[in-house]
Length: 79
Image (cartoon, rainbow, N blue to C red; front, side, top):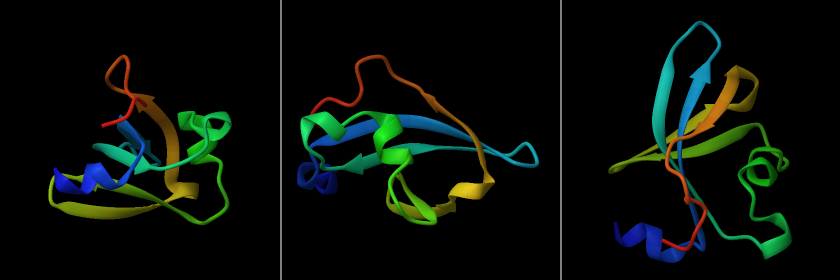
């Protein structure tokens, strides 16, 4: 998990996708405190969300995401 050391924020999430599929993983990112919420990250410009799943990085098209569920209370904290 050396990669998580590069980021200020980590959110463990489940993404519910159109068609019923689910993906679990983490959003890792750095942002100033006023933009550090999960919703801030999800609403940033761009077509894709970057989901970290163990050793994999999955690009998920935002338009395919129906819901983002935060899995662990207290995530969003520094890794």
